[in-house]
Length: 223
Image (cartoon, rainbow, N blue to C red; front, side, top):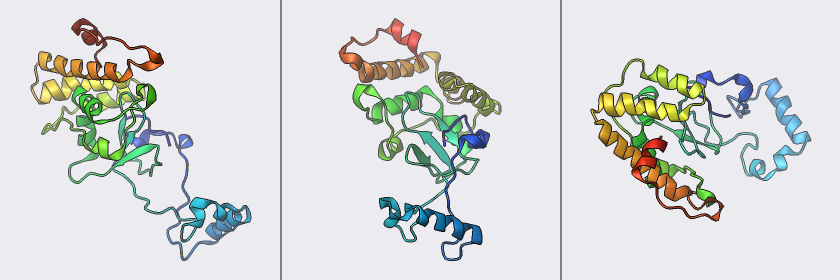
């Protein structure tokens, strides 16, 4: 399932895959028994990941996360999992100890989060950022006591249009400046840090080493 937008409830059902997960592995319904028999007739139960399970058709440790986060992204997309999806290992699953998924999402989309990503998350060859659980768990986000009532709607509009950069920019305005009271100069310095670290991460692409951007470039390319 590909995450799209701020809330997974907005995902088109045609874009989702389905996991066979019967309510009881010991008392299958007739249709479920037929489905399992069909898999055995086709040798599915002999594949490695199936034959080491008991029973073979039950995927272990299936949990519905509160949040879903993209793994490969220059600007990671975080979604409130109000659609109650489970996710494969091509996505990260987040579970909240307190608070709401909506509040967490509102706080996620700022340049402060991007600075945390650049500082904590490693990159693959060519500078591709890849989020893994432990590193993602080290990212610190803004924690305002409240967010503007219309902010989540604004984020949802940006993400629905594929404007991830715009979502982070609106978070800077609403959360960093509006809620936390950071000055424009302070926000610019955070953006500069993001741009410089991203430049160092990606400058070797194509075998070309480039010098760090100056302040004018950073301001122009800020996320």
